Image (cartoon, rainbow over all chains, first blue to last red; front, side, top):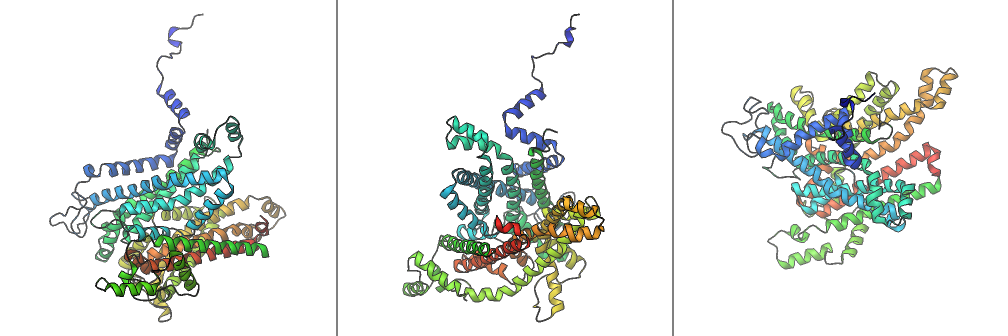
Length: 306
Length: 314
C-alpha cells in the first residue's frame, strides 16, 4: 500500500526545535543557557536579572526623573502615584535613583568579572598545566592574596587608586584574580590527566591549543558558577564601599549611597527611604545566587539529561 | 603530630611575611609624599627633608621594609601620617571595642548557626529545616551592613528596645554595654551563622546515612544515643575548618558594621586611613588583621588534626 502523501515527513523546512537542538550541539554556552532557562530557579534569576539589565542599559529612558534632579517641594515624600518609591531628603525621586543605582551595581559586578576572570583563569590554567615552579610561584602569590579576607583586599587597592566607581570595579577585579586562579588550577589538575588531553597531545597539539580548545570547554561550568557567585560578592562589596564613602561620590546614585543618606532619617519614620534600595539589592543578590544554583543543576552530570 | 605542627606553623609564617611584603610595596604606590602630610603644606623644604630623614624615607625601599618589619615585630608600627599618633597606640585603643564585637558576633554565629543546622539536618523537610533554609535565603540577600540598618530600624526605632548607635565599655556598665552590643553582634554574626547552619545540616545528613549509624540503630541503641554519641561527633569535626575560615570574613565584615553603628574600633580607623591615604596606618592594621586570620586558620588546622587523626597523615 502506498503511503499517503501527507504522511511523508517533510524535510524542507528546519523546525524551530531542531534549530535549537543544533545550536545546543554547536555551542556549550548556548546549551548551558538553554538548560538554565528550564530550571525554576534559573527562570526566576533570568527574569529578575533581565529586568535589572534593561533598567541598567536604558536608565535614561526608563527613569521618570534624572538621578540628581531636585524637584520642587518634594522633600521626603512617602510613596505615591507620582513617586512610587517616594523621594529623598533633598527632593529627588527614589525610583529614578534606584534605577541608576542598579546600573552602577551591575557595572561593577560585570566589570570586576571582566577584569578578574580572564587574568585569574589564565594564571590558574598555566600553573595547573605546567606544574613545578610555575605552579609553586603562582600558588604562593595566590595564597598570599587570599590571606586578605573579604573586603580587606579592596581597602588596600582603593587606598592606592583613590575612590570612585571605576576604581571599585578595578579593585574588585583584582580581588577576583586569586579566586578564579585557584579554581581554574584545580580544574586543570583534574582534567590534564584525562585521556582526551593525552589524545590531543599525541596528535601534536601544543599547550595553548589544549588549554583553549579542549580543557577550557570541559571546565566551563564551575567557572560560570563562580562568576555568578563572585558577581554577587562584588555587588555587596560595591554597596558596602559606597556606603562607607569609598566608592562613587555624591551626587551619583548607588544603592550604598542611598542607604547611607537614608540612615539618619530612620528615626523620622522614613521607611520607604531604606526599604526600596534594600529590596532592589536583595532581589539582585538572590537572583545571582539562584543563577549559580541553576548553572550547577543544569551542568551537573547527575541531573543532566533527565 | 610534631612534624605536622611545625610544617603548618612554617606555612603560616611564610604567608604572613609574604602578605606584609605585598602590603608594604603596594602601599608605596600611593602617590604623594607622606612627609608633606605629616608637617603640612606650609612647611619649609628643610623641615620636610628633616622629617623624611627621621622616617627613613631616604633609605632604599628594601631597607625601609626591613626597618619597618623589625619595628612591627616589637609592636612599633611607626607614626600615623594623618592621626598625629603612633599606629601601634591607635590600634591598641581600637582593639578592645573591635575584639569585643568580633568575639560576640562569633559566639552568636556558633550558638545560633550550629543548633539550627543540627535541627535542620536531623529532620530534613521539618520545620527546623524550613527555618534554616529561610534564614540562609535571608542572609544571601541581605548583606551585613544592610542587616544592621534593618535591625536599627526595627529594634531601636520602631520598638525602641535598644539604643541606636555608639558603645559603652563593659568595664563601665556591663548591662548597658550588652544592650549596645546586641544589634552589631547579630549583624556581624548572621552571615557566618547561615554558612554554619547550611554546612552542619549537610554534614549531619551525610553522617546519618553512614553504615556505622545503621549498625548503632540495628543493635538497638536509643535514637538519642545514636545521634549524640555516634553521628554528632563525626558530623561536627569538619565544621571546625569551616568555622575557622569564617573568622576572616567575620572580621572584614565587622569593619563595615562598626561604621553602621558608629562604634569606635578598627573599622573607622582603617577607613579613615584609606580615605586619608595614610599608608603607615593601613599597612600596620592589615598586617595585624592578616596575622590574626592566619593564626586562627593554623590553630583550626591543628585542632582538626587533633580531632581527626586521618588528616595528619595526608
